[in-house]
Image 1 (cartoon, rainbow, N blue to C red):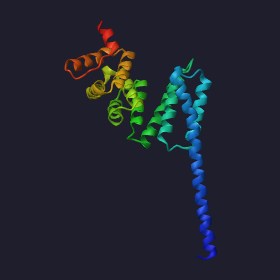
Image 2: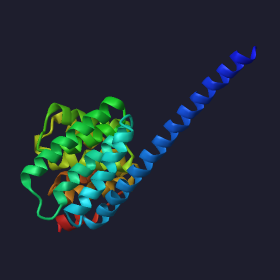
Image 3: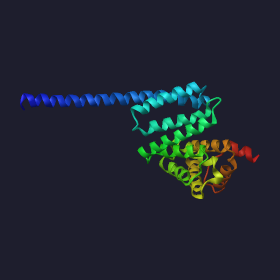
Image 4: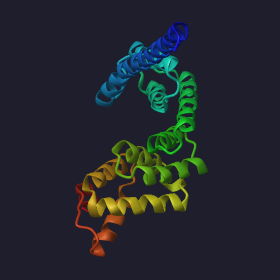
Amino acid sequence: MNPVAYRALAGVLALVLLAASAHAFVKAYANALNYQARRYELLWQDTGGPSDLAQWERAVDWSARSLDLDESDPFKHLRHSRLMQWYGSVPDLDGDVLRARLDDASLHVERAIALHPHSADTVSSRAVLAARRGEVSEQMNADIVRALQLGPWERDVYLRAYNAGVFNWPRLEDATRAAMRAHFDIAVKAKPRVADDVFGIAERYGRLRVFCARLAYLSGQGEADYSNKACRETDE
């Protein structure tokens, strides 16, 4: 290789390495910003929500800056969607603003699903958001079933699926209720921690009798060696 060609090749390789390094730096910085937003989300899970509007806006700013740098990550879109929903827990929230924030949340969930359509996180997130908006549709029913298929024992996934489904139990399609019962049956038989979570959700939404009756049936058939304190108290 003559010296001119060699220098040209070296120059091209240097540019490629520089571009790769810059891309890696941008991704790393976007992840760092997203982590800051996540810290707020984890805090609010313990405290019940933002302490004030300014705190919520700080978290959203971290998330928005992260997305500006990396729009290709479906889970950054899911994080932003969840932050939009946390506006509902801001003290002295504005109802009109909440509706707009839930619209924003829907846009980011749909973007996440477009990027990663076979993720239990994305479909369960769309299901619980639809429930929050009062949209009990064929899509929401399908998302509940799909979430339980894709991530049956992933805690965040089944919690979203059951929160969406139990809250809207009378309005669900028969096939959706059947899928949830089938999942619940396995939990009662082999996944007691999951069953405990389900009963916690059922109690929160006033649906204990539905799941206590199912537990009583399974116990009567000798298919379950599991008891629940809330069910015993209900019977008393």
